Image 1 (cartoon, rainbow, N blue to C red):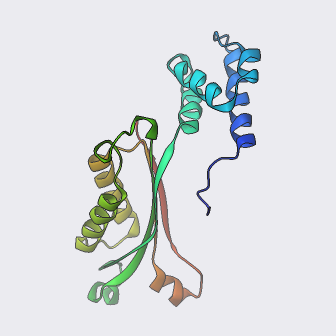
Image 2 (cartoon, rainbow, N blue to C red; image 1 turned 90 degrees about the vertical axis):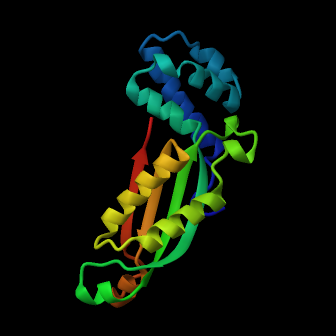
Length: 182
């Protein structure tokens, strides 16, 4: 399934057990014994229902359990990017990989989903039109655009520069950013 495979049931149970223990320690009114007997999906629902009463760190942990992703791997876009004068004279390929976090339980039709075809088209047009010197600047502009247009809960974006990697003799060079939105 690749590096973005779903959490194993044992990992999910361990995460839920840790959050459940935090709830008990903080004296929230969740019955730890009852949660342990439920299956993972019921436990997740119970924890999500009580998320408003949790401290900030626990709210983040509970939201992460319910996070689904739209994934795009190695989208190739040619653009002008680089700080050196010779880089400014040619278009070079970039490889973009991203994960947009959202809650797919509310999705009932394409109009309420994050359409990955629209995400790809938006990124292609945006990156191809830019002439940034730094990958960092480009990554930040991509995150801002994706956040405004698609309203994800989180964005994980990696931009690789294959020509630079080949010149340096390594497998890949690039930048990876992660943004979380309320």
